[in-house]
Image (cartoon, rainbow, N blue to C red; front, top):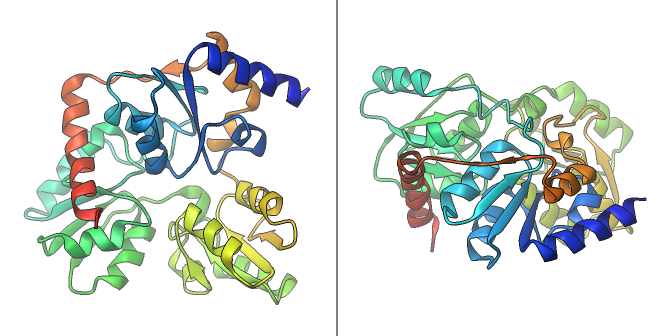
Length: 305
């Protein structure tokens, strides 16, 4: 049945000139029908290069918005309209304006996991893998980092020369796990290395053998000469790595390490969206798009080279 749905998807995407992007946290049956798989910003860059007139983002809303920011001429589809991101939605425009008043003279650095509306008020965007490099290269000494206090705190430790202020935002999926979860997983798998995402709490990050973005975690595990790993990010990565590296063993930090928003998108969601009976087209007014794009352009300017 899965194969039948996949074949129907492949047929429709070719007929309708659709490029399918899949975030790493999507299930493997979706990854198998995607044209590109990766982290959110990398996928948006792939969308900009793709010749297709329509792009489908299998992920969450802010990711589809980022695609639209970079690809205004393309039709951008989100296969599950309810797939949001709690962290991206923790701040709204009014709250950020109040924070800017509280911290005058601070440059606003936005994690890519923010809405297009928030990006319009920010000086520069960053990804988890580029944040350190970009903040080090910024001439500004005072930084207001939104919305993830865990990633912001992780970067602040690496950039002691900067005055980095964070706000009380986080990814509820990554932030819920504690040192006790790590101790429990290490006791069960004493020979495994712990690989975690910097969205995890500081007490989890401090116990890790490697800290990096989703794609960095996957790359590290694949290249390592070690054979056992505890994965401290969304449990779909355990599945993907197990398929890519069957000779190695991968364990979830917790059985509850699940992003319910990411898992809203099913293989059939992709099919229904291609059939025109599901999903949502992402629309941004040009003023918002251009204002949001400025922070992304500065990210590329500071992050390249």
